[in-house]
Amino acid sequence: MDDLAPALTATLERLRGAFGEQLQPAAALPGNLTLEVPLDLLLPVVRFLRDSEDLAYRHLSDLTAVDRLPRQPRFDMVYHLLSLATAARLRLRVAVAEAVAVPSLTGLWKGANYLEREVFDMFGIPFSGHPNLERILTPDGFEGHPLRRDFSLGSEPVTFDIPHRKRFSDAAN
Amino acid sequence: MRQTETLTVNMGPQHPSTHGVLRLIVELDGEVVQAVKPVVGYLHTGMEKELEDQRYIQGITVTDRMDYLSPLSNNLAYVLSIEQLCGLAPPPKGQWLRVLLVELQRISSHLIWLGTHAMDLGATTVFLYCLREREAILDLFEMASGVRLMTTFIRPGGLRQDLPREFYEGYSRDGKRIQGVREFIADFPRRVDDYEALLTTNPIFLRRTQGVGVITADDAVDWCLTGPILRASGVNYDVRRTTPYSSYEQFDFEVPLGTNGDVYDRYLVRVAELRQSARIVTQALAKLATLPDEAPVNADHRDYVPPPKEELSWSMESLIRHFKIWTEGLLPPVGEAYVPVESAKGEIGFYVVSDGTARPLRAHVRPPSFVNLQALEHLAKGHMIADLVACLGSIDIVLGEIDR
Image: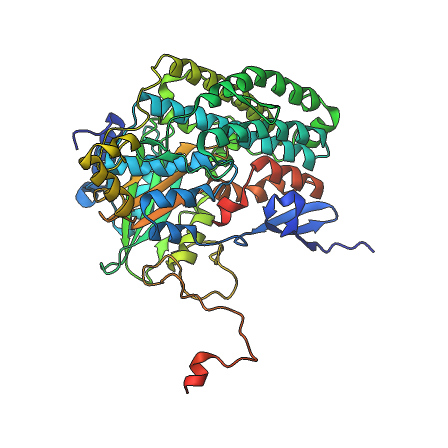
């Protein structure tokens, strides 16, 4: 952790002061700070980061998920915050098991709305406290969550059929 | 007896003012917009899934097709994340050429925005002027990469190749003069004056844009806005300045800010950015002129960067490296990286997770248009339905990037 910018070192110290040793920096590339945050601490930690005058992580850069199948818990929620005061970028990572609801950040940033809907659509991770948790990119009635690792490319059922010609599978029967 | 019901109207997905295949469900009270609900996803083709299935260099072609008005910015964002994973950095010439190309890209993207936005508001002339200059930039990209739009030109470690002499000097084709970048950029500020003469003090344009679609600085941050729409509200966040990449810290430019946060201020900010981008291009050309012609554009890192083609005829080692990179692909170490850049639309960044194989475990794009579009409801509420078009245009969206 020697190669961190002073602003990130300060952030780490402030967070440790407020939340103790529950927050662990994960292995990261030089200059990056990634924090492993327990699911129940996500909202308090993010609110603390956003509302502290000196830290001022007021810009939510990005929010997404990673499917780490076959690892359990299966998903990682990943948040990228930017401090508008010190220009430090911070990454938060939250391990989430399947079908476990993640607290929504829409109460802190209205802009988290679409990003969380996208994660819900693509990974099937539910968000608690989201005002309008619907699919966003896939069509109505779509089944499955395309960015899960067990959703293989090319397995999407087609909506058209050729009724007048016997399909190969029918002929075999 | 007065009717007090609201009327729900469907706008799009095939509507010229929605700039693509965007559907808006608008709730109207008379002509006043009460609520807007954007419906997106008509162009969704699973590009992030596609990126997971492509090797790193192949994936760059997918990023071209997201924001198809600024493919070079997308290339750069993806490549910077890959470079952070690999610990790569291009030499100065590669860095400056990237800045040069990306700023030309910003100009071309802003020109499309300016032309279509003015046309949405009834000023058709501007569109023709803007397209004329954009065409000159596309000619430049064609000289550099052989392709006008989907360039795939920025690669891990540098660029696909050095730029040809014609890129700087121009040439003649079928008796027609094709401008080089020096000629183009020397003339460009005068062109911006022409656009401004048509719009900046035009009373109709002012009536349509001033005080319309206002968003305050705090609300803009709350909606996670980035790019010109955020800066028009007075928030000084430009990725090029806040967390510089690709040698932007060596360039002298201003970050234009607005005060009112209305459609007009967004127009002013983007026009000022046109001038600043031209300044950066001029500086990049001056910096490049200090380097010898044979200065390398690519990092000398044979694990990730293919060796120069001419070496293949005499070096067995180079031939092996070349073969391995183009068959096996890059193998970045395990890790994750997010290095955003400032595209014409706002902050675009790729969160790339590597598991040490030739394909990313996850490649997620933070699409500026997608995030910015959410604010439309906030912007348009309480305005006339004609102003909805002005608000939507002022966000500057590209549906290819929203739907991916």
